[in-house]
Each structure stands twice: as C-alpha cells, then as structure tokens.
Image (cartoon, rainbow, N blue to C red; front, side):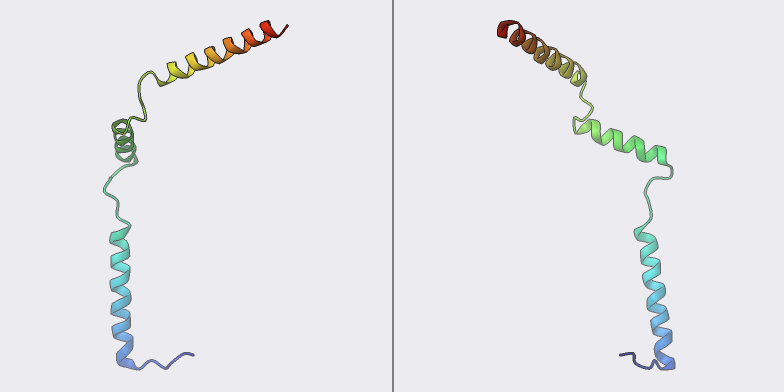
Length: 79
C-alpha cells in the first residue's frame, strides 16, 4: 500500500536519491582513460599469469604430430 508523502519528506527523499546517483556515478568510473590502456593492462596481467607462454604453439604441433604418428602405426600394424 502506498502512503502519502508530506512536503518535508520529499526534500529528504530527493537528497537521498541524489546521493545514490552520485555514488553510482563513482562506482562506474574507470581508471583507464582509453580502451588501449585497458587492453595493455589486460595483456600485461595475462602475461604475468603465464597465459602467453612462449612455445605453447610448438607443444601443440608436437603433440598433434605424435598422435598422428601413433595413428599411422596403429593402422599399419592392424593390416
């Protein structure tokens, strides 16, 4: 049920609403001024975590070659 709002209460409610809006604006603020800075920081963090490890691509190729060789040997010895 809705209650009637007196004149004195609307000012305090409006002030509270403004305070919430200001707080929401600060919460959405970004520490990066451009998207390039954001991307550079993400890449820096991922490198520190070892995500862009050198040689990872070579390991996949070697693993794929080993699996392929094993399949060829299985087919040759199965005949």
